[in-house]
Image (tube, rainbow, N blue to C red; front, side, top):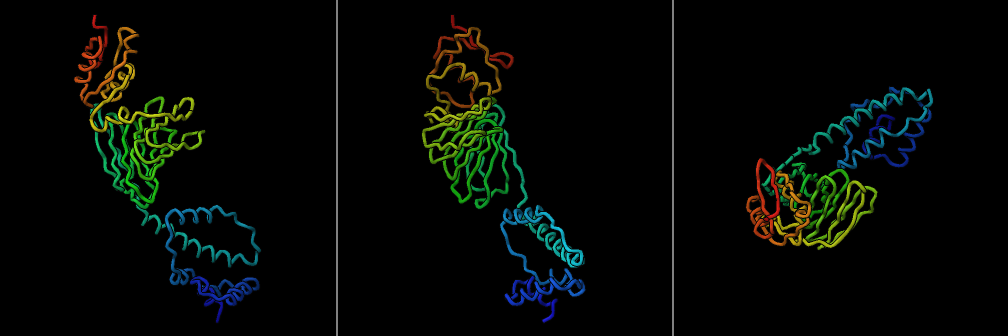
Length: 317
């Protein structure tokens, strides 16, 4: 068998141990580049392995990052010829991976003030997006691939179980990892809150160890201090908005004012500081600011006026 046939058999992966030894011995003793098969011949007989995209990309990165060792001068024609063949193979692999890889098609969903929306993802997960919030995801998301979404604002998640982990990126510093569960995330300028209704989630933040949450627990991340804390959660109060009901339990008017500003885009002004500390317990329909203000006015000893896109709260007397 001539050396050209040995090279082709080696490219096909059918060389015996003895034939591989002959091939190595020939390379050590010869520098006749004309004896080597053309790259086109190799490409005609090589069957490229089918790899997962991530594995193929890692392999390609390792090849490209491998330092080039000094070579003996008399092998330069052989090396140049085989580098050309390798370039053809790698070019074909890269082109094939790019062509068959599902290209990301980013979808961004944003809700205006006072409106909510439910989004069903390609994997079957349902996300209830609260008012003045934004969700970004890849429309090519599949059950067998990495499932990731990016959230600004507030959303309630009902994640479909799948082999791949589901990850929510909230703000700049928090990741919530889950396989299948129901949970709520609220992200504002200073903090991020994760409330777990069912299942399990792992919450990871910068400079903090991952925190496992169980149903009825919540994690609060303060971006300024980069601190992550766990505490008990009233899921009815914190996640009832997804059922179009706002539930309050000894909630200060200051907190309610923040909710009004986030969800309705209306600034709340108190004519006396002590008014902000008043507490309210009760329910109100979500998405109806006028009715919420009317309920607050009747339940507390206050007067509420809404003018020029601003809510002014003053004492009743």
